Length: 298
Image 1 (tube, rainbow, N blue to C red):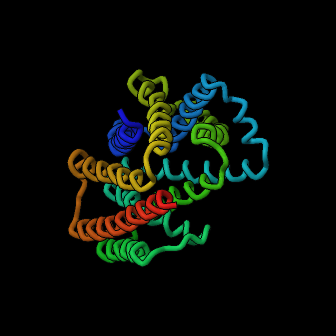
Image 2 (tube, rainbow, N blue to C red; image 1 turned 90 degrees about the vertical axis):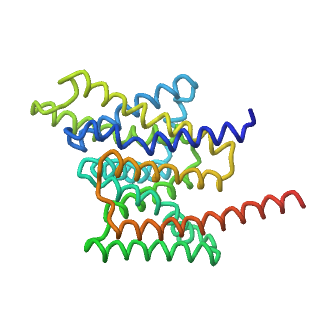
Image 3 (cartoon, rainbow, N blue to C red; image 1 turned 135 degrees about the vertical axis):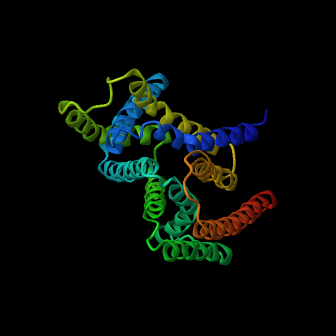
């Protein structure tokens, strides 16, 4: 099997897990989101630390946290990803999974905009039009629903800022994510202590909840490792294209499984976002092919 084929298969598996993860969090909707987040943080740290131990790279973690600049960047990344996780878990519990999926549709275009602002990456006319069309979709949905889609905006912006910070970190994905959840672990332990000291902690009350909470570490770690595996074997344009499977599955789960309302205004906004993503992906695809041709011809 070709390496590129393996990469595509790993990317599809990653996005499938992410897209269906709402079902898992719906099973825990009787537990406060902050408590679920605390367990997700701690179990993720245990899982990632085990991976680094097996790889013999646990010492790299100390080196990453030793440099002041890296510590600040990792700390900000930890804040962004924990906020993203918390808002996503909350959106599932309050019946806003459709809006959450919109956030992950918008994310690639937010990332393009952040790249243009932070790294002065030039946007082509097609890419600029796609970003403007996405912004128009958000405005349309705001007018139609009478309130801005805050969940979608927070998810897209926090994930975009997270990616922006990660781009400046000279660390592998496993090391950086382990460092992030390690920084968050004292807060997670405090949260769990507060719940359990008041007799409200979910872990240990029954084996189903305990098993599901512990599974959050595997659910978080495994897709990230597969994502890292995939990005080393396929082009970024392919990564971006396959990644749309994630919000597509989220939207299907929200409507078909959770029975959330998908209004006319949602349909209009989603159609505009899909159009924007199609334009953006086609432009990126052309740029990628042109770059490869230039390398071959040189």
